[in-house]
Image 1 (tube, rainbow, N blue to C red):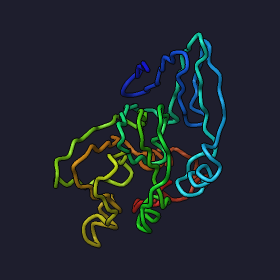
Image 2: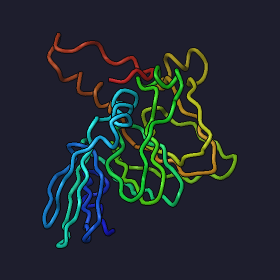
Image 3: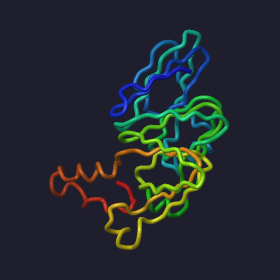
Image 4: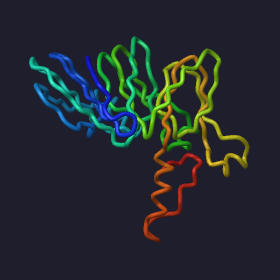
Length: 235
């Protein structure tokens, strides 16, 4: 399967060239354009799994599967936020993705949810992340540029909760607070994710919560609540 990421890193779109018989599963609402011999099928990927993604990870219930007929075709996908797109190949392994960063996948890939713990719910409002595993590949998107870090065995990184995009399945991680009590409440970070290698870690250079706080400054008085208290509760 051939693909091209166009407009990287600021306003990336994904161009996929589908040969006859190939298919791609994508987030509902992400299709920008399609041409050629393509058909679309809307599915939950299994009603139980679909409901789990919807209720637990905040994902949409439905997903679109694009199938290429004998003539093949081209599919354009656009994320909901301005930023970058990165391809994560899967060869029997898996990847953990935060819900807003999933764009599409192809191949024999299973999508499930993974438990984040109660601190995860407090930190970002969700108890679960998405887990994709199998053979094929996943496209993830970000708000801002994607920074990819390869961690060696035992190497540790502390990540701001809202800058997290994805990581290799099997990496050790935990949700914790930033520094001591004073740093936690007044240091501008709140909750963080502690990650330990080996594996790959994907981060985004901007966050939606910070954007929301900036935009609130330009709203008429009385039309918005007070700025977000950034300990990880989200927008």
